[in-house]
Image 1 (cartoon, rainbow, N blue to C red):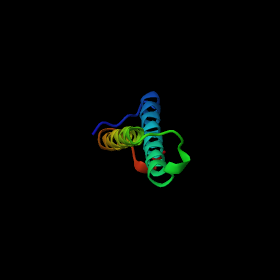
Image 2 (image 1 turned 180 degrees about the horizontal axis):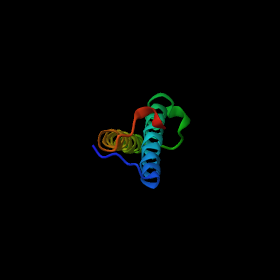
Image 3 (image 1 turned 60 degrees about the vertical axis):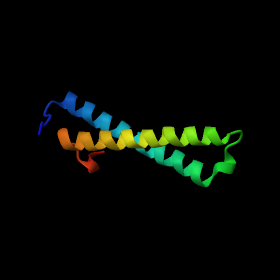
Image 4 (image 1 turned 120 degrees about the vertical axis):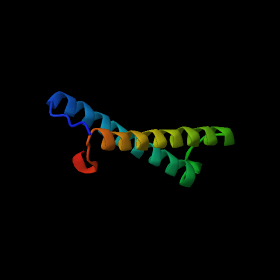
Length: 81
């Protein structure tokens, strides 16, 4: 496992981890809104809803992959952020 002692690299990994956490939160919020509050979203067709849900799911998958990778390879702990 690579450990980063250089402060600059550590800040980069911390920023990447924070962005991945934010992307995960954004995806979960969007999926929740689409599933539970669809009436609050105006002119969406069924295809619009599906496309938005698919984009949000992909964002969630990507974010979780990034979080796992940073934790595995760069010793970023879940509670560091």
